[in-house]
Length: 167
Image (cartoon, rainbow, N blue to C red; front, side):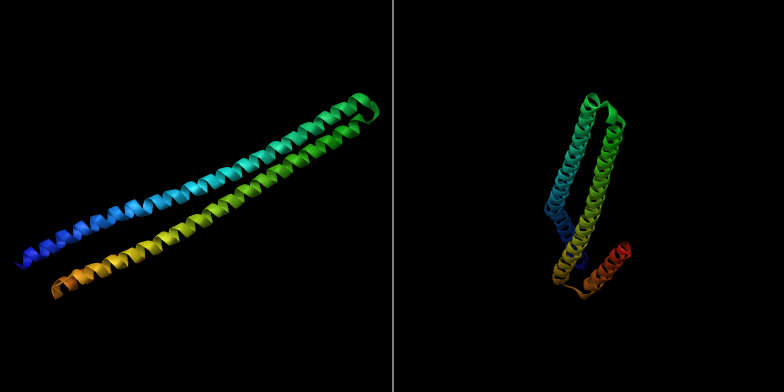
């Protein structure tokens, strides 16, 4: 009889475990996916902005080049000086745009790392809280002292495993 009660409790615990896994999968995974998709959209917006700024720099460069050609046609005596100025300006604009794009990419990378770390920490906290809640519920369901002792030993081993993985 006692063996039958243990098997019933074990089967009920396994069923509960799978129900909790399904609930976690249905509730936690969509939230994570939404956060990742939101961050991806933000990154795409930042990249598009950087691309537009680079295009603007290129447009400015092309404008400077056009003006240089007009000046060359009108004033032959200052052609060399204008070529040097236009070239220097275009290089400065391109370098400035590249520096700005690199800076923005670094900022985006740092932001992604920060948000990822925050999300990981939130997930760890949520998982620990959920594990504690499940453990509390299982403890309340245990009826016999020998089952309670076995359960607590297993629970302590699982907590030690989780702590080991965290470190």
